[in-house]
Length: 63
Image (cartoon, rainbow, N blue to C red; front, side, top):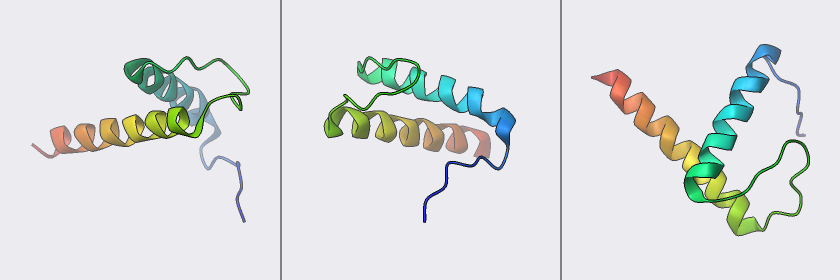
């Protein structure tokens, strides 16, 4: 069962900013709110970029 309930509600705006930055990096035009008109490829590229950025950040913090 999926839930959109955030463990830390204050993190929502930071996550939204992170998602918008990742979308910008891959050239996907996200808007605030509903983005159901995105193709699977566009949505996947945004998610993939977010994961890539998280891994890079983690690797930098390990040094």
